[in-house]
Image (cartoon, rainbow, N blue to C red; front, side):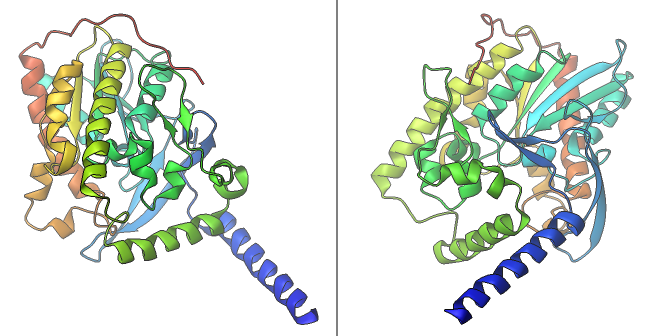
Amino acid sequence: MRVFLWTIVVCGLVLLCAELYGQLFANPSPYALDNQLGWRLKKNIHHTYTHQDTSGGSYTAKFGTDSDGFRTFGEKSKEATNILVIGDSFTTDPFAGDSEMWYAVMATELSRQLKKEVFVAATGGSGYGTFQQLILADEVSHLIRPDIFILQFCSNDFVNNHMEWESSGIVRNQYMRRPYYIKGSSVPKFNPHPFAWFYRSSIFGYSRVLGRLDTAIQGIEYKIYEGYGASLPTKVLALYEQESIEITKELLSLIRKVFVGIPSFITNCNSTTEGPNKLWVELGKEAGFIPISAPSDAVLSESQLGKVVSVDGWHWNPLGNAVYGRELANRLATTICDKPQAVPFESSMRVHN
């Protein structure tokens, strides 16, 4: 019993020291827990992150948010073209500095082509699904009324939008916290898993040790499953895909309604045609967005893929962001010059907790 008690004490001290070290010396998380969204960008956070890309090179990223939780680029004014971007980790994670993100590069190139100042306010969250983006869009529409709205989409949004499908996978720190959309209802639904409360609690949410431990377990599971979860039966997968398509379509329509009368674009950071992602252009059009088709192809066609992504092999480093941003600006400028007509919609559907 004495040995057992000493073991508990020693393990507790080790965990406490590791937690203190993580809180004091590790890179701060840019996200905070949120009862409605699950997690959101912190306000007024400024930090320089150090990263590596897959070619082995290291680089720094100067990251910052304003008092409303936006990453911004340029100066907001009545004379400028003000753009609002809502997305996921490709928009908000600090894999590139504020002035190096794809939308900052896009703004610089647009300003040159249109001969007009361009201001960008970007928000969202790592791993966000379309429902979280809808809730956020409804919230920030009271803070900013942009001249142009851009929704940054990703292929995994279809999984993120379907609770049963996502919950069959390994990314517990997302599906345990994320609100899900129920068709025809404005009331979010959270995962009823008996341990979901723990993931949404400050005990887990602000612990660097528990977060790293969960990530490490996910890494082991990823190798076991050779992906983000065990393979689902064909019929079950087909059902989930179809349901996620219907949910995503409705969510996109609701986001578009928030910005009624404003030219709104949707761009996909992932060009894969596997699964439901092959329908993103069609769904975007049906919802009233103007799709800017897959400038991520430009990133993938760069001479060596390893030079345009971070060490995680997925998110873009500054070069990848620059390639994507320039390509998006070229396609966006052409569309703007064609003077697209805003798609009329009814009044916005407000989302409440």
